[in-house]
Length: 222
Ligand SMILES: [Zn+2]
Image: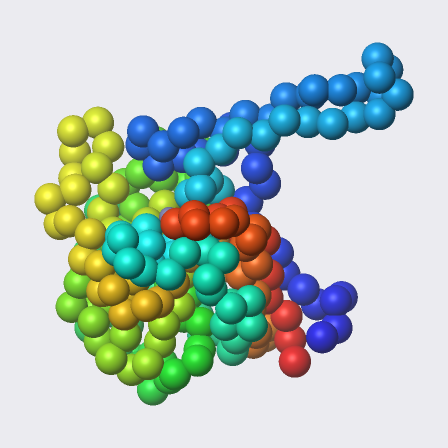
């Protein structure tokens, strides 16, 4: 790995981090300061699905693997990006198989598949909740091809209910991907900076029994 070509695909965690409706807020506040104590320590609170993060199967399945049960090597892999940025995706548009079918021959066992919607440009605004989402049928076809890790540069691969709008489509992509023992990565960013990077890592905290974890997501060239 040549560190000089690493592209960071993670949002910064700060007090403005946009969280899923009704998830716990993110806080980071000083417990000790250099000025007062001679050293600095911060206290953190956050939900397990805060910022750029991955979902473990136990997010939707009580008997599914938790974050600490996912082997770290499985979160490194060849990167396949499906570029949807030229599709002029609209608010709450369903991404169907026909939208991604041209990339089907790149969907093979072991790859980590990212759907590049361009929606990360709306991070921090109400429009970020109105993201496009993946049809259950399309998720099934991805998983049928042996892909077990799917990431999006949006809040969720499923429609997000927000202020009484949306959510009627359920959690098809979560159920299909996590139900197959797979992993979902959410709130990725900076995908437009990818320039030939062909591998990706999604590195979570080793959280005992948890259903998700913030990650540092990054891609590099091999
Ligand atoms: Zn999540």
